[in-house]
Image (cartoon, rainbow, N blue to C red; front, side, top):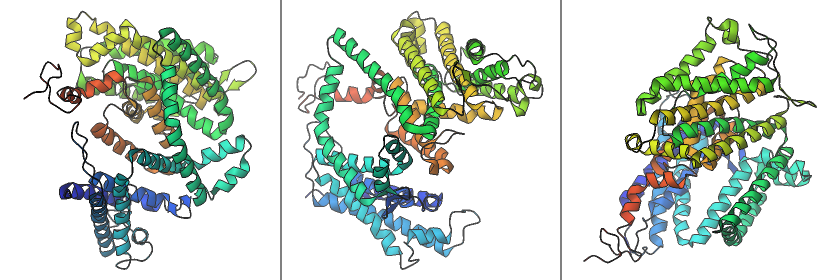
Amino acid sequence: MIPIDVRRVMRWGSMSGIVMVFTAAVGMLQAFEDRVVVYPVLSLGYLMLLWFAPLAGYQATSTPVRMGVEDPPRGLRNLAGGTLAGLWGGCILAAFTLVVDTFDLREVFVAFSPRMVELLTDGRGVPDGLPLTVLLPAALGLAGGACHLLAALARRRLVLALEWTLVVALLEPVVSQVLAHIGLVAVADLMFTLRALEWWAALAIAALVATVTGRTGESFGRLREHLFAADPARRTRNSVWLAAGVVALLVVVPQLLGSVLSEVLANVGLFLLMGLGLNIVVGLAGMLDLGYVAFFAVGAYTVGVLTSPLSPRFALEWTWWAALPVAIVVSAITGVLVALPVIRMRGDYLAIVTLGFGEIVRILFLSDWLSPVFGGAQGVLGIPGIPLGFTVVSGVDPQGVLYFALFFVLVAAWISWSLQQSRVGRAWTALREDETVAAAMGINVVRAKLNAFIVGAVLAGFAGALFAAKLGSVFPSSFELLVSIIILVVVIVGGMGNIPGVAVGAVVLIGVLGGPNVPGLLAEFAEFKLLIYGALLVFMMLRRPEGLLPSVRRSRELHADDLGQDAWLGGDGALTDAAGDGRARG
């Protein structure tokens, strides 16, 4: 029998305990105690507290996959290791509970309250409830370790079943509204009670997902082979049909979502527009721009000044369509003005200087000196919507704004993809990999950087123009540094240099958690979303720096060392020579 790796077990058990202690210490357990996820067995507070325990139990007895080395047998070692990891994490949580109950620390830590102790001990208090505080994480660790005993397909089915069940439970407003729009109100009433998923419905969803997962894997594989056929003509035809299907889906979906969800997706579209622009600057050209929100502000204020009848100075009352080209041109000029002084800078210096430019723009809009033009702290009010002849699209019509956002996103994605495949895009890629080598190869570095800044500024100007029409007013407080940081996080988490990756990042971060000043689908996390942003960013940098959906080139760049190391191993695990001809060494 292979012995348990005690050091690994203790490390993962300690991590589990620290995560549980931190979750309770920041107040998540108390903040989410009333939000029931699966009725009547699981609340969001206990889900946030205990989710890491089974993962720690699984990882505590995981063994790294080595080519040519047989996997160790699975059995009692996995069960014992997972249980010990959960038990050690539970002991850390119990010790924390005892400290909070013994000492009054509320002057420093507001969340350290008797209510938190009551929740951690399931209402039994100290010391009667401490055994449960220890044993519950141990049981979850045992469950995590037991997952090793399942076959790979069964384990994948189980994980997907749990994930989709929790997604349906957490997104109850979305599911209920979609079911209501398609005439299945009775089904929604049966599945949910008090905003929580019924336990039997959770079991039914888990069973359905587990059943469908095994049968659809091969179907998706065949569909992928058909869409990405080797024949270029056939591949192009399939791409056209796929694009037509996506467009048709985008036309139908807003009608099923309702006003609230359309508002959330419209905000996702705005941030996705800015994310696509910043993806060109950061993801393709490799220039870290922390003042990107300045271009967004310029586009919004340009439209506001030219269209609003309440403009402090001009009151030109142009239509939105007439002001849009001007906003794009002004954004492009701003991009040039920002790029020229920093064109020779790299890395941290470039980031700091662009951050300063972003703050300069915001302070200028806020200043008393320019208040006769931009309104100062009061901003520009009374911005009209987008006239279409038969109606006017504005913030009171979130579905109309969503259609405009989707249209602009498609245009921006097409522009980004076209540029990425062109000589300009290849020049940006060369700059990102090594600017000195790119210059030595004959690439005009100054022109390439200017092009990146201009294209990024134009896309941000698009988003600003739509933002002004949607909100009906613009204020300097809407363009703080945090907006630039959130857009950068969207690009990093989604996958730098990859258009679908940026879309995934925008949906996950902005759509689910919400932006700096806009709500997401999980409104309960509004107080903690910046904390979750930071934790997610740290995790991505440590475990998956290429992003959730990376580009192939970017993934190879970040894992070049791993690929080079694997090249020394043949298919049978034998070492090969440096030339890589596959002959075994020694």
